[in-house]
Length: 17
Picture 1 (cartoon, rainbow, N blue to C red):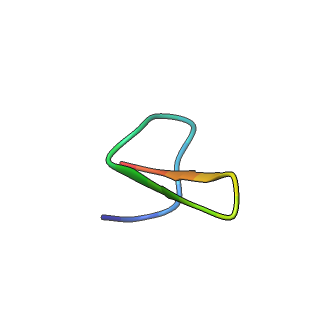
Picture 2: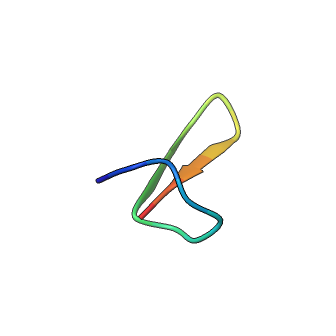
């Protein structure tokens, strides 16, 4: 949902939670 250090989904290696 928002940029964090956990996984909701990933875009270009950036983890979102």
